[in-house]
Length: 447
Image 1 (cartoon, helix red, strand yellow):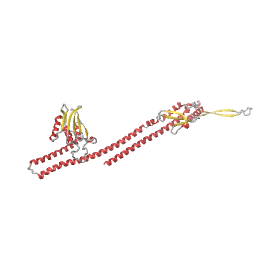
Image 2 (image 1 turned 180 degrees about the vertical axis):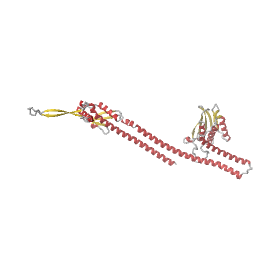
Image 3 (image 1 turned 90 degrees about the horizontal axis):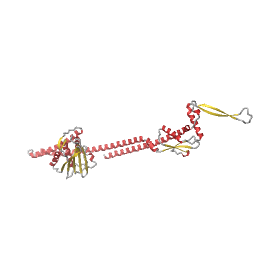
């Protein structure tokens, strides 16, 4: 079973690691793709800005801005005068043509004319105008990030640069875009996939972790079940053996006229049957409480007298190392005497069973807020931190191998907690190995 559990946890760890690697790779790939797309869009936007720049800074002919736009063309025709006596005399005749421009071609014609005007003017590039154009075009690409345009030589362009050549300049110019904190911008644009990836990783890891805890808990429950069966078998074998021996003695070896011997054997049988009956009643009580069947008989009781009566019962069987200290001014408390009796008896019984020969139990009562508290402290063997969280679980017993020197079914503390819950109380425990255990029970005040 341990090997199987180890294999499952190793497989789960490999799965979680694989998911982490895959998600990390996916996020990194998404980041690189976003970076490439950003560079591509910014280059396209820059080229659009340079194409729109001439039209922005050039003054077009009025003929292209009217209601009926026309493109004027001038043709120079050399012509010799008819009555000229001068040999070789030639005059030029200018012919002006006006070509109408359709609305579908108007923008192309304007851009062409603006490009020619800009190229022939050889004016320096107006960077503020180009920057404004570039910024407006970037918004179409849903890119809003600080940038700076720098004029460089075309030979200075690097493969990863965001740059475009200036076509309307006679010089080998290019415009380069410098952006600050590009990595931060890309991360902000990819924050949603990254968060989704982290959530998926946490969900996957959490699910596998919970599955591992569930499997481990099921294995523990299986061990508890086996221990319970072993304990029940052991606990039943002893009384059955006693009952069998006493009945066999009465049947085969005793003279029924010997009243004392017969009475002694019958008393032993009654005592054994009473113990079995109490154990059966305890299991049935636990079942009833778990199904919500709670019967509480609250009445005013003298808590000091009740605890002293409980200690007296243990004194009668030879246990004289129980000390009681009362810290309550009002001894009359409205509660269920049967529940308090059962709780204290179980805790004292456990303290004695799990103690060395010099067992010592101290019981104290004291005020606690609006209510009161009961504390049972012993100097027993203690409970390890590993087992302490499970001592109130049904059928759970601190593992002791196949040693059965301490009798029980693992029901006592579970029953105690159920009874305390019925009174709306709380129970806590502190323990150290070799030092002892302290149970603290707090009850609400009288209603």
